[in-house]
Image (cartoon, each protein chain N blue to C red):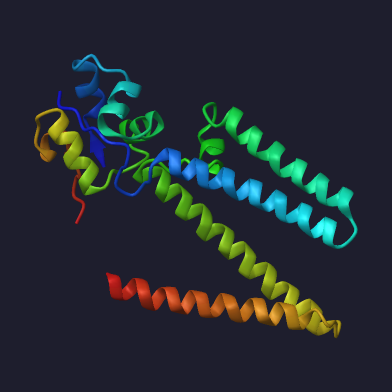
Length: 66
Length: 141
């Protein structure tokens, strides 16, 4: 799944560690989501969306996933 | 940016309780080694077992911040990704153990070894645990 997390994080001037702290996840988890190696659960995805005041669709793109 | 506080995360558990549980497990295992050693008149080997477990706990404590793998070994399953990693590692380990038990059972059967009884018990426990957990987890959805 493609996402814009890195773009939003850098625009907000946050480090990966700071975002991890804000989301209550580890820095490695933030890195894994940014690089697309890990797809977050719906709960975490919603938390990310709320953190940046965006909708899920504005951050995550599941492509043609069914 | 909005903040989400708290020490517990979905799919994970608090870092402190996981870490303390692992440390308690290490100390208890070490004390069990010592107790068994003393009870069987092998006090030195029991003491060595205790020292090894305490050294392992110390290594985990010192290195858990430097490596995610060591952090996971120390019980720091702090978020959903780490919980998923831990579950995948557990499933892989269970597969390896089942293969080892099956191979041991076949070899002991072929060599008429009395170990077949032990392997048979282990295989039965594995099968019951697997079927039972499938039944419970499929009901939970």
